[in-house]
Length: 522
Ligand code: SAM
Ligand code: SF4
Image (spheres, protein in one colour):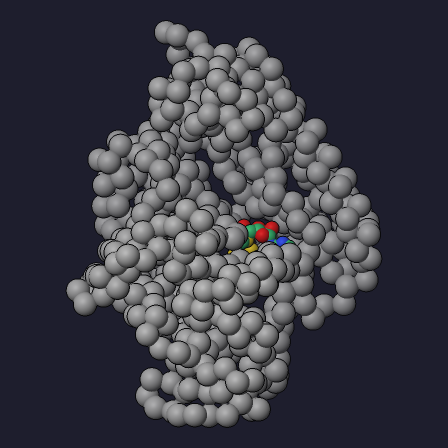
């Protein structure tokens, strides 16, 4: 763990900059010839802290009347990196742009505002953003009035903001994950002022309801149920960039889901970094994730998913509710990260191998057709060959249907980044390869179990590779390709599995037959 008294100024030090002015709205500094309005900057120490103050819920409108025409005649473009949480934040920002009168640009050349909604989870995600910023420099030089902004998790990192201010001085706007609702005001300042505007809140704010959302399609929708994470796994930057765990009130979540059902959405995914911690922060009621799922089960929306589950908080009540089925699908994404208790301990995951396997047994006993997927990190500092083998054996034992697998990436400021790492990178790469081979084997095996069975598919669109072929997902999120007319897009169709492959399944439509109960989880 980072010790008290550690020197955090290395992340954010502008002692060399000239202060032009300073008041209650922040400081204006001049750095390498560029004026920067520092309204608030990321503060590592504050991001680490967890305050006891009650979270407030706000319902007022984020776009004041005077800013409703700010975007008239202008176009915006958002590039989104990372997880579903970011995708959904982009939907909120698109909603805000819409309310300000901006139109969406088809091409970066016609955009008046370009935002990069960034991900900080691994180094390669960050490299991509810096690469893209480099490419955008030419555009900015050709079109100086273009507003170039960086938001999302990377903006919460002092070292990133530092680097942008020093080396990417043509950026106009930096804001973080806690003040997305401030976008209208920040854009106003960026359009009319000359300085780069930096407004990053280090302490998570309150919960802002009623933000407009422009969802990507009318079929599937993401619904935030909580924000932040208090788990502090030693490798992970998320608790710093997304703040403390805070749950939306059940009545607000349920109202949103009801509205989506009314609008005809077929599938929703409840979002949180650790959805199983939902409700832990309520002081006025005893209402947890199992209760929320039980209430949502009664809403007329055909499929309900959730991501991500932390094994530690996955309680018996939740298993009992999920076992009731209905619109609660049989797919559970349950990140394990490692099969070695020793590594799990150093990751501070707060469960061991046996506890994870016990949870899987309980889930399978209650929901026999449950399909499990996971996240795994290989090459955690000091991971031995034996410990990696334990991961392989756990993966074999659980028979995950698929997995997101990663090589450990050190994140500055996290405890794991300070651990001695004696595992050469080539060894980590080889481990990843071996793990991926095993996952591919298990994925094929799990797909083959469906051979000849009838499964229900929600048709999402045409296959990207072959004309006349539709693609969709089963309840357990398996990708199905089958021939059919475009009119079926957005509908549920029963198909018979004809040729299971490793990462997708070929099938044919069947009329008048219902999905095979045993293959429901297909
Ligand atoms: N909250 C989720 C959970 O605990 O399962 C995960 C959120 S994180 C954005 C998604 C995944 O990224 C994690 O499950 C983990 O496997 C991976 N990840 C996080 N930090 C990482 C790091 N420093 N290096 C490699 N992978 C990492
Ligand atoms: Fe990161 Fe762990 Fe929180 Fe997931 S539970 S977001 S891995 S700290």
